[in-house]
Image (cartoon, rainbow, N blue to C red; front, side, top):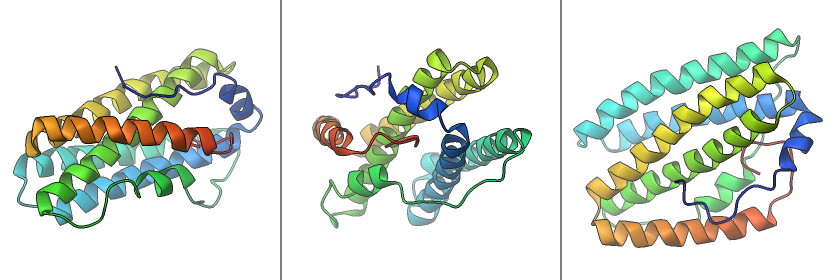
Length: 193
């Protein structure tokens, strides 16, 4: 369903389990950045009314996810660590050339967002199936469903605002690029990398 060309190595969960505090901190910042992305789309493309309406709802949902993850950190007696660069996202957003029409820029941003949500969904599925901490596994199962909805929403908007055949070609090219990025990332305790 997600279309990812390179699945995550299931052993990634073993790395995560050695440092749950790190993955929760990274995850919290991913939720914060997802909130910021939705706000940025509202500010940058206010003329796309249907998109704005969905992004307003998404902001509320993503910030509630941030709070849920932050609460998980606090429940364990930890303090959220500092933000760090997301090398995955930094590499992904270099794929499409800068510039072009406003619609082209919007489609590119929507495809980036769809891909990031798809990878998050895939990682959350692994966590939900493999984590020994069953409470945390259930937490990730619930979030996985949400991420899948976000992925389909962003991809749907890209197809709505761009020419379908061209958008699908760009999507497939981006998926192939993402597979190469994934091959070269370190296998650390982060949601995307």
